Image (cartoon, rainbow, N blue to C red; front, side, top):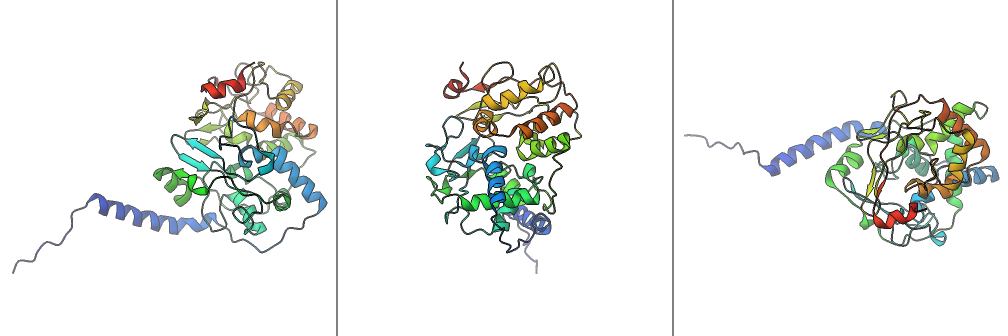
Length: 341
């Protein structure tokens, strides 16, 4: 008797099933290497930690630039609502990635109220949430892995001290597209190994301390961005400006500027004091007003101490000059108002 051929054709559904099985196996195999167990340690809330945490959150790291609520969720053209400080609810809209919801950092139950101190620290430095899920890299944890243990604990202590507030719009507003969602939040293509035992920087070494500040403030991410992610420090174009723009339908296109000492395309022809003034007043060194997202950060960066600005500028001056011209912003009409003289 002839035996029937029971081999099934490879349909789109079965191919998707095989892909899903492969991804699940791959993720299970490598997922754990990016996740460290958290402790139950309660970080002591000393006055010194509160003060340092306030400075980190409100000035150096500028967390409110993304996490403080805007009226319609458009952080590029609207001011921060002080009554909903760090309550989140804003939306980043990227044509390639989709819509990303900015979470609530307050001690509210829908914010960080149910998180342990170490879970918050892990999320900030490693991009892993309390349930062990990967965060999308719009949260710059690649930069924050440089945050020292002491500064990280100070940041958490300060976040615990702010008033609880409800986010003005629900999390289901987030709609990441399928491929970015899989790559970022499932596979974790952007993840780094767990961050542990990071010492405090040496404030006496201006260049080394400035490097620390540049990482923690997010400078090295935005100003080195390529289609494959930020350039490494060994790259000749490190901090030489972005190759890909910030893109949002409510903003347009904005390329991060060249911050290296190149005299033609970077900061080489400007004095340290002129660079410091730009951080304070939000005007580019050619006199034009800064475009978003840098203009969103200026209310925070303008409060950076003189000591820290001196170190940051010293670090920028120590970089290898990169001859890399960056395109001017292409802003939509509403955003154009922000840079008008």
